[in-house]
Image (cartoon, rainbow, N blue to C red):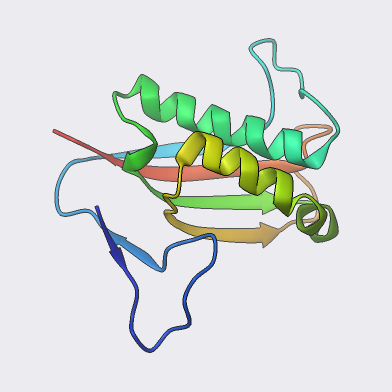
Length: 131
């Protein structure tokens, strides 16, 4: 994967402007929430939910034979931007524990609500896996 950052853009923080994936198999990961194997939301803490949701996306990628380095795009849907901003330090620490210093192309969208009761975060993604 090759990170794409136009020289006329400001330096991104916590994401990559574009990822060039020259070849591979594309995996589209459905929106995941912070549930466990019994479909229970793991916590009402925002950072805990965010990181469990990320873990669930990573689990789908691994099940398909990929790793975190194959994730090229993530979209996070959050119900509360203030809670997201307050949790950025914990999310950042958890991110680095899971993804290292790798940041795919990402978007964050505030939504009025999510389908699963108690869910504060939903993340969907795209990965390009090796052939």
